[in-house]
Length: 471
Image (cartoon, rainbow, N blue to C red; front, side, top):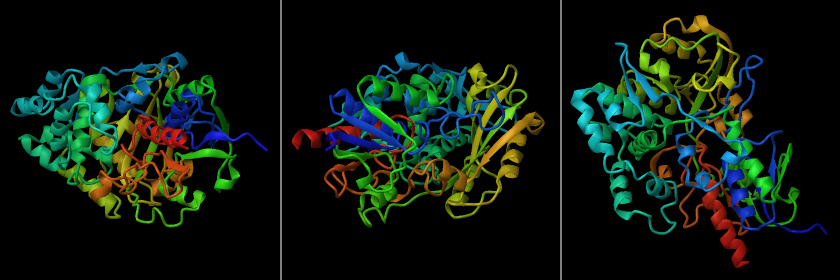
């Protein structure tokens, strides 16, 4: 008879790796199984275009990673993780050649919005700046997990965070500030009129002021590799190239933890229709470029920013997001772009660059948005196409094939819509537990949601070790 393990983790994305580390560090016997040949999930790095060009197929910039309470409690730097900061965290260019920016300086960021809105921006972020540690612990959690660390600031943040970004933006008079907030809210891949999209925008802005929006040296794979090295150091075992289709294919264990979509978990663990009401959202159309030089942004600020949002007005951004959610490919997409090679020379041969961009399209869409994306880029970086050496294109079907958690190309593993925005994957006191007492869910379908921060894995691990201690 094989020795019974304490926990088996399925899926080696950042949450699965974090859950495995958290359990192994507490002395539990842990094995992790990953279908891919390497660990990583949504945090990988590959040569997608040409030799020597290292691209991040999924996540690239990590404002919540550097500020994650889970990651901060781990010695990841000892295992090779090094954060690199661009001179500007974010630039949001406009047709006149100017740009709104986010930097570590609240004052500099505020002034980029123009004199009519600089004061309003300062007032919006002032109650929370300098309090990232407690704010992150309180926001990146499930509301049912005890009292917040800073109840006053948590409640005050909540009053702003629950608002749609469109309502939060009414504090501003100018289009620059409203476009900046809409772009930040667009990371939720939902219309900016949706509940709690204001909280997404505010959290990303505060992250820029506190810790910046960094990239890992060498690519996002460095995060996953550091977590995997730490897991092995604390006694965990990793088995790659093993696709799990049924629970009984796994070794005997006291608990099973899944870094998968809820529907995949239900299929593997035999939970029937437990998550039939869980909804997936709009998808992304992603392009990775190998370039002969840096992107020729008209706005000088964009040339120094690690992340650039492309959408000149809040109305245009919201229209693109609404179109994707309604099943229409947007003619003028809102783009989220990253240019890691401006601070990380390991990503491309000398003098060359990698560039990362996605727009929003309907779930499962099989069309080609390359022309629409490049037309939008040319509006703000004339001559961009002339620099393209190669491109790797991934629409929703390709994204879903790369990562099974991205159902229909939804990189958030679940729609930000209605109550599901704040209650994922369904209403439960312990959202990581399932109808099977020994089966748990730890993916970004659980609180606090998507992003490479490991907090879903961290909280799921807490639920698992409480179960193991009580058994």
